Image (cartoon, rainbow, N blue to C red):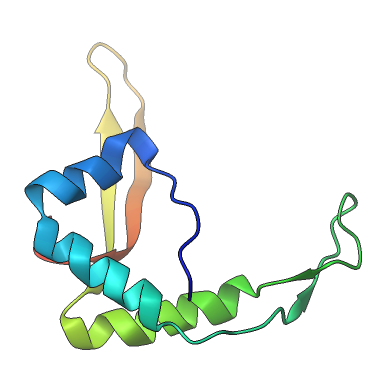
Length: 104
């Protein structure tokens, strides 16, 4: 897969480049080695109806297959949030990451 654009949410790409260069290199190598998938999904969205798109499910599966042998794994942590001076708690809140490796 050719990486054309990147989106650095909250400076995440820069943090990887500076603090975790090996992990950043692994990520870029995985992206480069994802095979060309073609556009296997037909959009049903009102603004793009009938347009050919990449299948998110196929892409996620390909990334999972490439990351897993390198020791990356999915992370899902569940929390209960309580607010001081408030009697209600928010249960079953969670954070989820598709692929993590040794930094959580």
